[in-house]
Image 1: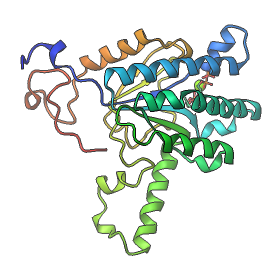
Image 2: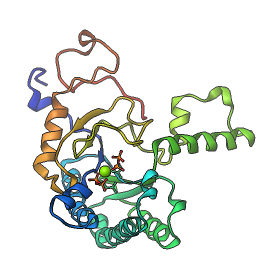
Image 3: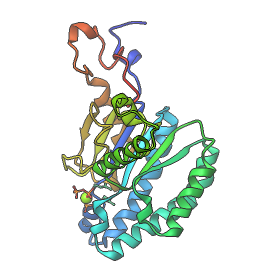
Length: 259
Ligand code: IPE
Ligand code: IPE
Ligand code: MG
């Protein structure tokens, strides 16, 4: 392989995480109710999911509703739940056809029975998918997820199934909401905010961050390509030196652990 030819050596990010922000401002800029922004945001979701599946991204995790978003006005929360139900219903067959596997992280027990049921059905019906894994973060907070992992491990310790002395990063990751999910390679946040807002705290330890001022409903496939292009220029050192890594950008990375 030609070592100095970036176009030949760039690796698609295996796990892309997106904080989809700016729906409310998109609507306000147009004098529309916030929910109109959320509705338009679903269009961006559909496009980005299709594009990532086509490009060969293995995991796409989307921050759709945070643990803190429960504090929004009741009518906005209800509208977001309705949009989620509509999304699952309208995308179900397409996900199956495109071999997309759906997974959910977050505390879904806070959602209504009917929403929980629709999520469980969609996860089950798409479970055979061997293409893109779409991870929806719903009622999700990174700190909550870490605490849930601790709780699961404590249960096992008290059952005698887990030796506390054996707990390492791999054991810990295996108790997160979706143990099969690798570390995030690229995290995108739209709308100009430069913060994590409690998304994927554990999995973002070495993620490449990309921020754009574009509001989520305006996030086009060109924007996605721009984010990927930035990613390809990054040099992921994982604590090592340039000399140890050799000459390529974003290539020949040291073996990452699963999480
Ligand atoms: C992101 O857009 C979607 C959710 C948090 C559900 P916002 O609703 O946060 O939009 P802004 O930040 O108010 O513009
Ligand atoms: C983060 O956006 C959560 C989601 C995108 C679902 P917020 O709009 O809730 O984040 P803050 O409040 O600006 O940090
Ligand atoms: Mg916001």
